[in-house]
Length: 405
Image (cartoon, rainbow, N blue to C red):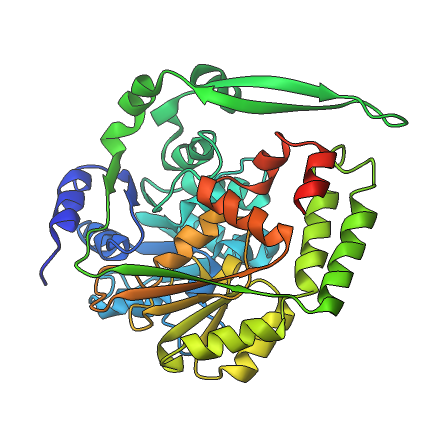
């Protein structure tokens, strides 16, 4: 079977190594490269493929699983294969022990962590468990299109999974070596002091790449089709506006807003947006925009909007940002609707590459809906700047926020 030029380069670079990082942009063929790298080691007697659960067992039967994707390319030579969702490893002791025992019984296992950004947080149970697996195998791969979604600290746990000797430093040492940071302390009337450390820049990046460069292959996506982005604005009903303003006034008067790590603000925006997520105007716009339901993905944020979209557009593929924006290969669905906005621009970027990827032969169209309230404008501006809501709230006062919303 023929390989794309970037796939050939990735294979050439990683074949001599037992561990590696495929930081290839979404849609460039990481799965195919991983398959060939595993099959290049004849003595492998166990393959463990860890990925977001949505790619292991898609909720929609029309969506291909990662197992089907691998079998499309001929499958693994090894017959003993475990596919497991990263969320399952975190929540299920039985799933953790299944993999742990299989690794113990194996002589030459190979572990692949797809969307390895999911193990960036060292304190998370999922990360600790995957790092335990890493100690039991010599052959390991991490796959990701965007290995850093928040800050440089994201890559520490990923490379410790591959081999702690690559970086050969603790998380604190890594932070002190490569990150510039400052600590901000705020005091609230009637409440205790609140301090938080923020990363403000990076240094010694050449040294970092000298440590990891041997193990990393990076490439961009190059296609001969276009991405066409369209935006439509809609108006909330009077009832929806009234509900929106009521929540805004009550939540933003709470003095604990910033002290509680922005949880109150996030809860507030969820309630505000949920109140108009099924606005009549949104469905009218989408209905007029869609030319072929069977070739359309609709991304939603709430159960209410997801269920209503499934009723109104039954032939479309309705996905949630968190579970549907990763790992899925949906080249046959070139049209995408962003029915609900999201502050997480990383999810938006990931979602665009469910259909804009290797094998796509049609131009990809994307429709974004923006309501006539401050929250919608705030979401749009943050996405344009590629920053999350937590970073935004560091720079703005409660009074400014109230004026914007």
